[in-house]
Image 1 (cartoon, rainbow, N blue to C red):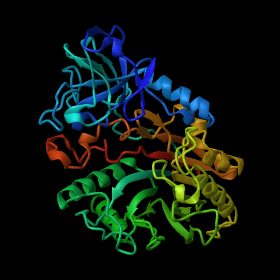
Image 2 (image 1 turned 180 degrees about the horizontal axis):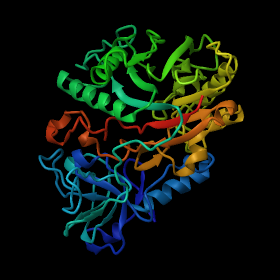
Image 3 (image 1 turned 180 degrees about the vertical axis):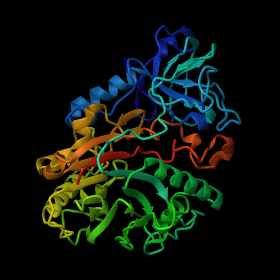
Length: 473
């Protein structure tokens, strides 16, 4: 049974247990860790961790509503019982002595809560989600069901391509002034201080090196020409050696504050010809005031000269409204701007079919943050155009790269042309970010304890998990 909180969100209706001491006889799954640092809470769910509806179901108003009700009915918040935000010490971060010293609670782990009191509140200091909370009277026992992996899954192939959303990598410090973007009048994102940027930069470089890919498509780069990309290349080459890495210099791309980019390992591949960019000017169906323009570049493998083209994407997000273009949330699970993303996907397929990089080769790989789950219209449009959804083929509806509102789903994708699909040797997600609590990322907001940050490990380098593809071009 569910009810609505004062924000109109469905929550489990546990009023009959409010104020009572209860016992939970079965372990619950950790579904979200986002608010562990600020509010001292974890979202728990019965039966399994929560999943996004359209990751396994076709869009449907009735189906999505039933899914949201079911997710709410199975969820409860584990609360530390503190009424203050951002306490000096964090509970539930590494709560059991049997775990390794570098253990962090992750979404997908299980917890035997045992005994506690049921309370209804909005959370620490009157902030956060208004819901029923369990405040344990016996220390919860966490079990690491979703173990960290220090190295990415093997995908084989002579060339490895990866997609990585970088959580706003800005070399311009966000001091609160609107000085970013190509016109210099947009809000900056990313690091709020030099100290934060140094932490972000170091962790980003170490993560990219650990990713061990030959070509990496990047999202959420500051759109400041070559400055942000050069910063990354300088960091990589400082470790890997001079000239080991390079980037495609596409300059300032359109008008958004963020852009996509491409970096590559020079010992593995070399650019073949010139890059090409898909914008509204190329195809009116691609709205570059909403979607970030697509960057495509062909490469030749150093090993055998095999040629392939990589197209890096970052389509409009679900959370930003598109009411100005008549594209609202239809409550079918696809969020805002679905038509905008779908039209962009259709334009992308046609554009790639025209061989925009003059590669004279049919091996094409679409990568990036499409801001659409597996069964949503933009992915279906690309599949209808003949592209093979590699994550769906290899992992299926359990694929995920992002956790939103406690529900996991795949927003980051890799799709191969029919010609290239036969040359794909493996595809995988490296779950280093989406499952991890935000309090271990580079941010220092809310007087966060710096001791929980470790730049040498890849975990929580971003909020999206990278997708990796092995190919034999």
